[in-house]
Amino acid sequence: MFNKLTDRFQQAFRSLTGRGHLTESNISDALNEIRKALLEADVNYQVTKQFVADVREECLGEAVMKSVTPGQQAVKVVHDKLVALLGESAVPLELSGSPAVIMLCGLHGSGKTTTSAKLALYLRDKQKRKVMLAACDVNRPAAIDQLEFLGKELGVPVFLDRDLKDVPKLALLAVDAARKQGCDTLILDTAGRLQIDQDLVQELADIKRRVQPKEILLVGDAALGQEAVSVAEHFDQALGITGIILTKLDGDARGGAALSMRQVTGKPVKFVTVGERPIDLEVFHPDRMAQRILNMGDVVSLVEKAAEQFEEDEAKELEERLFKNTFGFDDFLGQLNKIRKMGGFASLLKFLPGMGNLPLDQHINDDAFKRIEGIINSMTVKERRQPEIIGLPRRQRIAKGSGVQVNEVNQLLKQFSQMKAVMAKLGQAGGPSLGGLFGG
Ligand code: GDP
Image 1: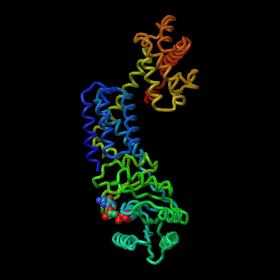
Image 2: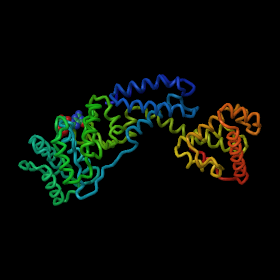
Image 3: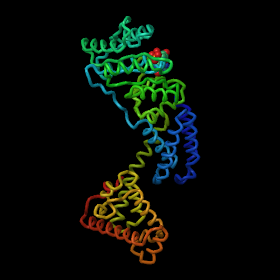
Image 4: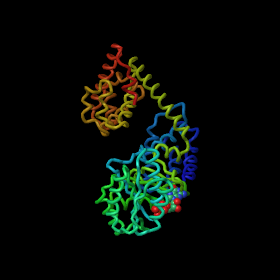
């Protein structure tokens, strides 16, 4: 399903080869390609816009690692953002209750009945559950027959009653039957419609009220693209779904549903189906899906390894510089930036040696960071390396250049020299390795 998207992504990265580092201008072509690729894959417009903005910000904030190319670094950034977009990690089914009830709902033809059977097989074989299926689409005899047939084929008991039209009652009887037969899991295959309508919503809401399923899973046809996403939104508003099973990922759909579903609905995709055979059901793993979409797993692991090495080297170098007393304002800013990117600036600041005691720590936030950055940017290279040369005239010039009062510059210089003093002491005491402290 993702072939075209994969090709387009690879094309986008090709434009980044052989350039020094990632800058606003050299990534803009690649980002444009990525934007077009996502929109062509029928990814929701807002999702695409946010994704591209996130990738841009992350790429520009990346440190230059000599051992990998900027294109490779960008692949890793896109990979990580795709994983985030898809939901970070797999979300397991909630299977408490005896039996644990899973209600599947969705439009006609989305793959509900076949997915019920696939899920039964998965839970029985992979999770060692004792599963029963229940045919709750009472108005379509063919649907009952289909589930009965699938159940027989797989050796999974199917609860059905061709004469009973009261669906909530049928569902309750199924719960009873499951209990009596020692089944710990009951999957309800409910009715579908060509479009979501009030009758259907009412019927499903009644089942929900009476049976209280722990899982209400929307079965959505990935071939419908964004339409599948909006169907899921509707079902969620009407019923409060707990997750999504996306079907027909083996087809020629463009991938937009898979990519937008989580972000737009806020509900996790728990499984995908990738074919017509009962075994064609897979747990949805965001990282594996991102790998599948990008098809550049080797590059991603290469960059991961390089980043680990880079961080180790950087921490070591920083440690040496601190103890040799050549730690300057560029290093200081680099560290603050790193901490800020890790989030929770104020709480993390205490990890910077010496910073815990400083007046900065209380209210430091993005604004404060920007002011510090402004002050440091107004220093000359020499001043940043040797802050001790910054006398009053230089302080006045720096204050003017960064639009702050001289006392703010004074304060920063004081804090910086206090920090260096703490570092020097730590060094003399043969203190702990700083790698861990800075290794962000
Ligand atoms: P329902 O009306 O929602 O119960 O849908 P069905 O379960 O009857 O499925 C409708 C059609 O889609 C059937 O022909 C299924 O074999 C087919 N189908 C379901 N899931 C998949 C899938 O993952 N891949 C493919 N290729 N076909 C599927």
